[in-house]
Image (cartoon, rainbow, N blue to C red; front, side, top):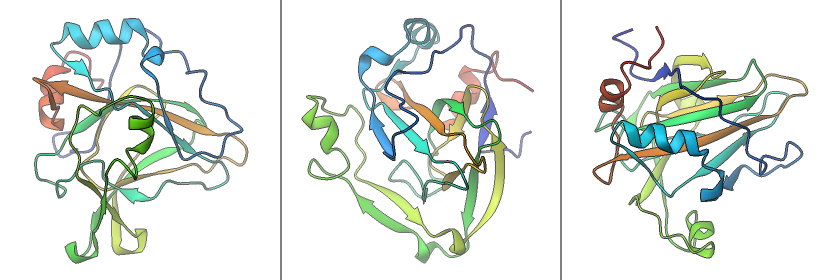
Length: 205
């Protein structure tokens, strides 16, 4: 377990209802999640451990029949440099997984810059000024990386989102939706290592 820098299941003291915005017929890759979809018991629990929830709330869709999201990171840091985490909830295909990869050659990692006219546009249009500063995210081709960790996300989970990762949904019919929460400690994104410390009493073996 000490070698696992990618993922932990977390036992939470409540059940998180699937947000109404998750329309299983939708083909949208991502969806802006409004503050109203934060389950009150979840907010109370997060605040009870001294953290807050970022206003950058997103949902990710992975279609059935071998669907996946591109290989990416969610931060502007190279994998291994101050790795951050998210706490995710997933609904749908019970066989779908999140996969983490290690790039074979750092020169193959691509930067995708974010600004108000690009990936963050939906937040500004909704009147939300993101409270986390991400200049760019990283992308890579699956062929340029090796799979190093894979796990079925059928429970609430802490995920290392600074390492390159993607999703995989082999179900022929079932959709996969994920609700992603960036957690803040003193207004800064929570690192994966710090998350393991804070949630140590809730992490499943």
